[in-house]
Structure formats: C-alpha cells, structure tokens
Length: 433
Ligand code: UDX
Image (cartoon, rainbow, N blue to C red; front, top):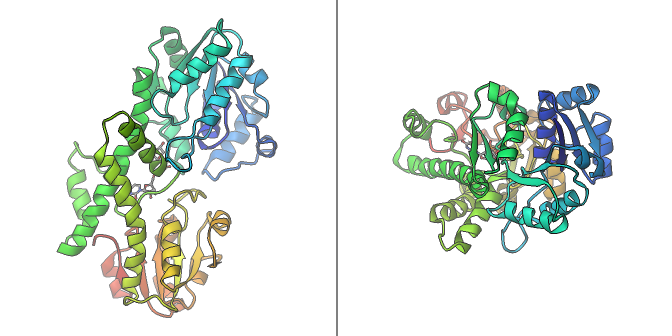
C-alpha cells in the first residue's frame, strides 16, 4: 500500500518508519525543510531508542522517503495520515486544531482517487466530522473517508508499542475504509493484535479516556504514597498488593513526582474542557489535573524538609530532568516545577541528565549543568533523583557519598532501597515508604 504521513513528530515519524518496516511504501511529509534534509541524511530529530536504525534501513530499502511538499505523496496514497501537533491552546487549555485543519485543506486540494484520510493526532471528539466537512467543502466530488486511528505509543518505547500494541482502535463505520485499514494493519493482525472498529467519535474519545485513566491511576498511587508516609506503610507494597488483582493491574502504579510529558497533562486538560462544555463535567479527571499540578511543587517542599527545613544557601544536585527516561523530551517535566521552587527557596542547583540537557539549558535559568552523576554530586548538600534513568539505578553509592558535602538523598522515583541507603550512611527520603 502507499501511505502518506503529514507531520514528522513522534507519532508521525515512528508510525511512518514502522509502516515502512511492515512493507508498505511510506512518504513522510513535513514543512520544515531542515528536518526533512536531516531525515534524508539519516539523522533523527528526536531521541527514541532504535528509531535511527529503523529509519535508515527502511530509507535504504526504498520504502520510506521524506518530502516537504505533500502533493505527490497524497496524490498517490491509499491512506493519508494526519499526524501533526495538537498543542494546548494558550489561555483556554483546548487542543489547538489549526494544524490539523490546515493539513485537511491541503490534502483536499491534491487527493486523487479513493483516499482514506486518517487522524492519528490526538483530537477532541468531533474533529473527524470537521475534517470531513472541510474536505467535502473543497472537493464536493471527492471519493474519500475520514477515519480516526489514535496512537497509544509511549516515548522511549515507541517502536515496540507500535509493533506490539495491546490493540489498534479504528473509528469508522465505512466498509471500504475498514477494508483499507485492515490491510494496512494486517501484519499486526497476524500477531493477533485486536483491531477494534468503532464509530469515529467513540474512537476519538477512547484515546482521551485511556490517557485520563492512566493519569488518574498514577495520581491515585501518588496520593496513596502521601498517606503511606503518614501512617507508616509502604506504597510499593501497596501497589503490588492491589496490582495483582487482575481487575486493577500492576502497571502505572509507580508513585513519583507527578506525571508529565507531551500527552497526559495536555490531554487530561483538553478532556475536562470537552466534558464541561458537553454539560457532563468529569470531576475525577479535573481533580487529577489539580492534584498532579500541586504535587510537582510539593516535591520541592519534600526536598527542603530533607535539608532540615531550610534550603537557603544550600547546593542541590539534581539527577534526571526529562519527564521520564529514554527521551530528551522536557515537556511538562516535573523538574521544570521542582527546580525553580528550590531556587526560590534559596538553593543553588547543579543538574545532570543523559539526554535532556540541551533542552533544559533553554528552559531553565541559573542551573549549573554537569557531565555526569558523580561530578554533579560534587560538594552538594543534597542529591535529588527526579527521573529514573537506568544509569542512576546502580550508582556506586560509596563513590557518590565521597563527592557530597552531606549525604542527603531524596529519591523521587524509589529506585533505591531505604535499608541499603541507611547502611551506607545516607539520610535517605523516598516516596511513600
Ligand atoms: C503516554 C501514554 O502512556 C501513551 O499511551 C500515549 O500514547 C501518550 O502518553 P508517554 O507520555 O510517552 O505516554 O509516557 P508514559 O510512560 O505514559 O509516562 C507519562 C508520565 O507518567 C511520565 O511523567 C512518567 O514518569 C509518569 N508515570 C508513569 C508515573 O509517574 N508512574 C507510573 O507508574 C507510570
């Protein structure tokens, strides 16, 4: 099949490379000339393990190509994906759909023959209807279907999530479009991945409902962690104890500094707006958004408490700045709230992250960036782990302690065991234990 993908962000690029790997012929289109030039040369604009090799191989095998102009790609495509950004609109928190609609207009002007137009961007309920209206208005004679096909991949595990998803959701009631989508996803179908066909609006909502539920699950265990601290219980054991109940499930029950990233914060907010406007507010999701926002700042207070209640003039080492490991993405990262709050409390910050420093330098003021965890710990009054990168999981603790002025560690991801830290003479605080 011939596939065109508009937008080479996370979702567009990963989907494009994976569809090409399945054997389809894929053209990824992006207006950004620099980005396209980089991709053609085998460079990857995002940090995603394994993506560089996959792109380079599928390009070499001539199944993946990159263009700045969508005309040719769309004209010859059986399926056109819209995978452009839907950022939060400034001021009201709604998803900004201007890129989606602009893509729809351009597609309408060049499509040729029966074309399935697929929204892969996370878009509010009803966006598919509007895309269809826009295209129909420009091409009253056009032979096309508009389908919703949300993407559930996680950054840092994107290729695996794409190729081995729990399910593929396809929102269309049109038989012809269903047949095209079945063919497109046939390689997954053979793996027995459930392909779930729903109405278009339902499919659009499934994506938001899934993200909101996961965000709620994380927020629930985060609040449980606070309770555990007060009553002398252990949140990891609570999570395990409840997670083994198959109705609950053990995933996404790791307590931490609050969720961040490009999806959960934006999508939960957008969903609450949609629900309010529909006259059926989602109070659980609204509360999740509030609790998570408060939590990131509360983590700074936790650090100050570990310093004896006063951070004035203290130096703090921060390990991990990105919103999670295996990404260079800093969007809505907890570190962006925690670090300024510590600075406001009078602390000086030294920081290290394996992939996020370039972006962090742009976003943070007065932080001294270091080139490794031990250098970062040099002479500090406390060390805070904000992101659980693998390379922080097995640090040489004695060496670390030798570098620090005082051996105070605040582990916001629970990657060390309190008894091990105590045995090595650290004043150790974690989350919910
Ligand atoms: C998420 C969804 O998982 C994915 O299905 C969707 O397509 C996009 O949004 P992503 O944002 O890449 O993916 O990362 P994810 O692994 O879900 O983590 C999101 C945030 O939640 C991170 O800040 C992470 O640290 C936090 N988290 C996750 C926890 O604090 N505890 C957990 O148990 C799991």
